[in-house]
Length: 315
Image 1 (tube, rainbow, N blue to C red):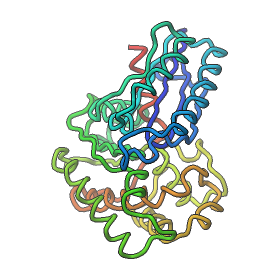
Image 2 (image 1 turned 90 degrees about the vertical axis):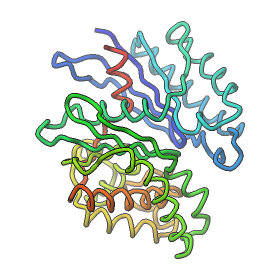
Image 3 (image 1 turned 180 degrees about the vertical axis):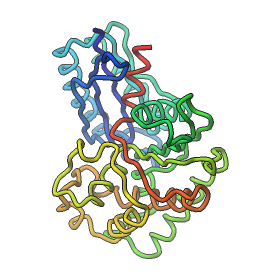
């Protein structure tokens, strides 16, 4: 069995999946991990990675390399997304990743992928375990710097768009107060609406029957909606939350202080200050999908771009 390693380095977090193919063609997880490193902190304003952000990422990736070596990874692919597309000093980041990844596989380097490829990888990972009867699916991958909106079915992607809006980008740009003021919330909502309008103009979501949400904002919202005392990936994967409950959770989070969010059981500490921005983006996604596709609930998947990367290595 070929053991593969997939690493996804986004604006807010760096994540690892070590997996091998199962008899049914699906992946068998050997290890899955996420760390918040804030690689993209300040990139929206400065256009550069901060030295401390690169160092946090280096330390996490070094641990991931140790894990991959211990589990016998033979092939590895690391992708970098929104923040790395925007950073002028990304060569420093690439040099660091090449040095570490070379310990796993000779010549392995991180690569910046386009928003379109990010969307397609997320879609492949998200819908692999869903009943084809629920298609067409619209998958939304709400990250730190971008949000991918993807439409497709069991045959693959039919339309996709990556919008320059995410929980970190929106928080840094429009939500400085704790808690945010009404004026800040209104401005942030308008900004999210403008950026997502480009995605909804490119992706005909009217035909969608099922909305699938992936990544940390969506999974945390689902855990809060379910009233879990702590985060439980087994209970969250492929769970459903009505748009009524989703809106309630989002509006509660937006109005909270960071201290209030921090004591919520399912809340990862690294999401405390940015999940209000993620909730605002989610509200806009829900509004449009309810109006255009008559969507009434969100399906949340723990499987996403990491799984798409790993499956691609095995092709």
